[in-house]
Length: 403
Picture 1 (cartoon, one colour):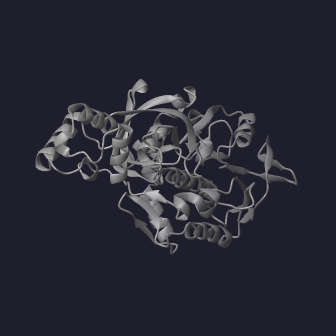
Picture 2 (cartoon, helix red, strand yellow):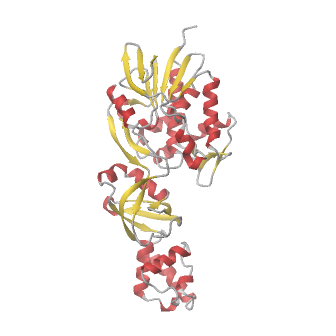
Picture 3 (cartoon, one colour):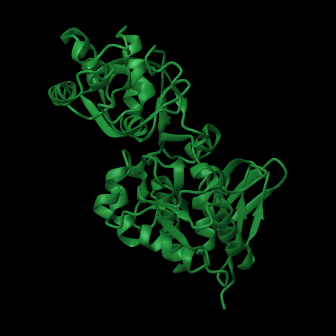
């Protein structure tokens, strides 16, 4: 039998571990090098510690629509390994998964530790090495070998899998090997807004709101959440992902327009007039007219100086117009961004033109594979970023296994 080859995986995150977990231990010695003291840190904190493993979207053509960058390239990747395959992989390793009503997929334990244990056990059972607190400083290519330098020692490998995430240092290392880097900017962030309407209302949510950035002629809809610093929720996060580069150029200062009830002013007017006719003596403050919380409704009244004790019959046209403007087309000035929870995602990384998406190999470096967030690929929230990691890692492992 031919001598085992050495594979070094740089980065102990989702893509790195999934690559190792699917490699053939009879053919390869595999070592994962992770610079932090713990592996799989993003897996651990994902979904509030529950780990949003993937998303119940099983048609690759539909699935790529959730990726602002990389959608064209990922189509072929997802035809080979998609969320259904991810579910099968974990469930066959005694990690049952569940699909929640928003189609996000979690382990039934509601603990990311279940996912982490499955990956770590699979890698350890193959006899592969996991090394923590090993920070790679340089990679040198010399004939058929790669020399991976760290502070304490050097490693040699015939094959390198680069799954470091998008830290500036890791991008510099791969840039020094000849790859072009698309400047990373934040994606998936929330909007910082100072406005009287949002004051004292953190935690207030809206099931389906519409948000526009008028200057960019772009809009998104979905759940919306008022936070201590402004607005968050899927509608905001989708906008931040799709417009990541443009908003970075604007230095995160721009205006948005929010429709809290996803109804036009004429529809909102008709609903209010009908309610007014049916409940003329009811106080405005106690009236439940739209699908918004009583606290938010009363805040709209307060900001517009409308007396909540006033009867519906006495609501003036001017006051009604103020209400419509505030709930259907309220303008806010965004003054900054905030990271969404701890799940920092970037748009940018290794130029996709330099990757062979049949197997995620570098077109520039032989026997060198790249996956995960170090690539110029990112997705909206909901398990999609992890799915890209699982799928890319699967392709890498399959290609290395048949070498």
